[in-house]
Length: 274
Image 1 (cartoon, rainbow, N blue to C red):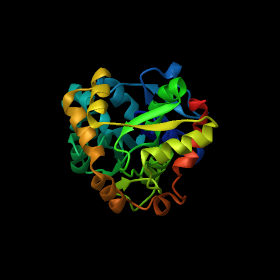
Image 2: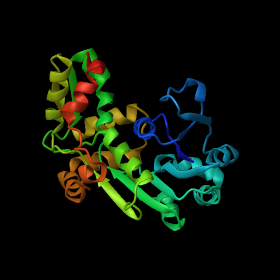
Image 3: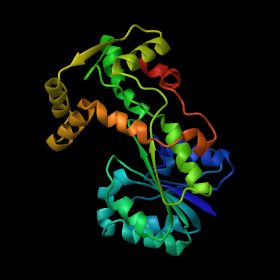
């Protein structure tokens, strides 16, 4: 009986697929293009898309657990919301579901909580993998520019997020839990840049942007005003990150392994900054 992972090629999904496969669980990875995806040996790659109800229903056949992305919420509109998908999952024999949220408690999380399945909501703060967006600027100019130099962040490794989801999909004691996840270290952006510079072996410096400069950069990237205001407002207030850290679940207790540090992430991804 398989575990169906949606978003299987994403930052968290690819780690989740690998962890489940390494632990000997049959894994079915949902992807739009199975031919282009690379998964560990033994993983069943299936073609599917949340905008195509029949493909998802077919992928659910024989599954006993399901991993969903809240970030794909717009795609559930074709299914008249997430409820029909979760109903189909229950009919197919799914017992457990994890939802990886996108920063908001929205319709996917609410539908999971009403589904009658054993649900777990995985609520990470800042992904360490977001730092990959700095690579282009770092390579071109040897500088990383971000606002709010004094704000401390607690970024979490994407593999640790996946490990928590894997534990919830395969083990007992996680039903009805909402796990807030942060990394073990409180770091300013400048300290993160120092870690990347050390790992890459290249001099990379941090330069602070004003809030308005940060907004202008996001506008140039095509990000909408509502999202810009939320992102800048969140990052400007140090209490937001402190609150997440105070609420954070014990990753080591859930997964059996200590959470990875940002320095570890920087070493793993150093090639992107060379």
